Image 1 (cartoon, rainbow, N blue to C red):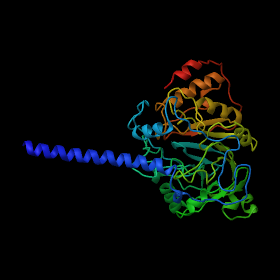
Image 2 (image 1 turned 45 degrees about the vertical axis):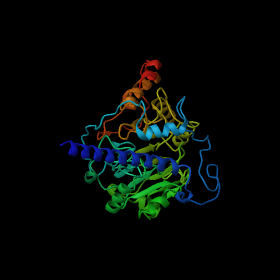
Image 3 (image 1 turned 120 degrees about the vertical axis):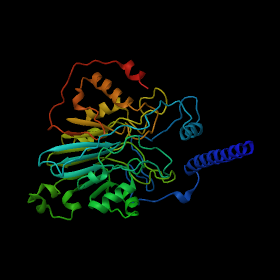
Image 4 (image 1 turned 90 degrees about the horizontal axis):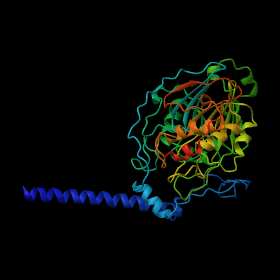
Length: 412
């Protein structure tokens, strides 16, 4: 019995040691990828230099993205602790209960219905057009699943319950926004039109997914995407299949990479989608930057629905925003500068990417809205899988201001 127990103990020790060795090898690989192998670099786009492209890499004209280590910590140590989970981040639930929606085939000619699928994925059904933003149905947002961020909430719509998708917009190439397995399934099933910003189309096309890529400040019509003449759109009476929309690629403040060494080889963006039911703004993934980009999007026309990120903003205790991600306080400022009528907060509660508690973003958002005197129903957190009928454009309702900044900063 003692011999068997000893052998079992040795086996457990060997397995444990191998597991630890594998984990540290993966950490070393992740760190090395960011600094060493040039063969992992990719050229996704080549074109003339511009205000945000130097001929090789894209950049934010309003300042670079900096990811400093927490006070009193080195960057290498910070990354290693993050990968190991050896830090003081608040606990998250292992799983969140989700009641998936079963959306209709399409919205009425002037109607708009939005369903939060999770993270930055939203199904917007507007004037008979079914639109998906950054669709992610995979369980892991990672190049090496099952390692990396894992969903704690299943998608708010089962894939098989999705209506036929007409249009997909993809903000950038990070794994929690550009999910190639999901995009391939959608392409094989529905042949949707896919619009993104420069360089991202090369990644998609390499995986058999056609896409149209345009620069900040440019736009493309549904007619052009569908190969139709403009008069065909004017005469279109079948709203279920009418490509009467226009997609504008607009500026935000972020960065892009799939492997580390290909950093900023492809562009990141936000979008304004014009439809007969009204305009939709999708912020993508963004930091604040100079905060000039919301007003640029607003100039395209009144925004009926804005999809604005509020999570993954805290990388150490007490941080209120990062260069790459806005927090709830800045999200409220974006909402104001857009002049949007209604907003849905996104980019929280699905993948654990940073250090705030699971429900810190919506709780902080509610306090921030009180500080600005904005009625909560105008920018209200929704449940994953919850569908809302988006009201028509109207002035934002104001309420009495009740601001407690200390309560905001006290949230973990």
